[in-house]
Length: 293
Image (cartoon, rainbow, N blue to C red):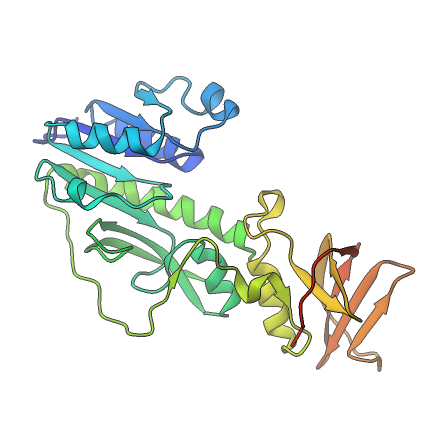
């Protein structure tokens, strides 16, 4: 049990990450209200079974109304929350609002940061817990943890690793947050910091043959969310047709072949540059049109 002036904790989010945060919060002994506006039938049946929480699967407008109406001193935790909290809620003195972001703020604010750090071939990323202000991922930082990136990571595998590290960090900060003694510091000003909107996709989802082999591999990994298909299917244009693929592999390759080998019979495209090659297996033609330049 934590001694705290907070009367309740409100959790807004969806999925496994959110339910794991709720499990951590249960140890505080405080009442927990869970709002989920991205629920599925599977989540309703399984995700919160056995958790002692007040669980509501409602739309975001209802969530906003309830937050505006609450008079209790509340810690509000945005775990996997895909919408912005209105200013009138942020201004309420009885609410302290924190958010989990899967990047090292102020870099890569907004959506799908795990994809963008891979696409931009950065050496490091991480996780950030921060207070919410009127900007998008601009509030004071509570805690950050770094993650070194390597060329085997996909967007999905990186996201899973970030979520686990974020949960471990949440365990460490929840006590100080509820006791209102958590560290906080303003984000540094970085003029090159980017804001990613949900509708933006690396290179509009198209592989570019003119890239170097490392950039091509970075793009492929950035688009790889497994069955989730968060970014849709990656595509490439060849001979005025557009293709996608089921599997991509990176390998050393020293044969003297053209840079691009299209094998329609065996259903693959081989991209061969500087002693390394990427093989796109199980290719299939898709509709659409784009200049690949």
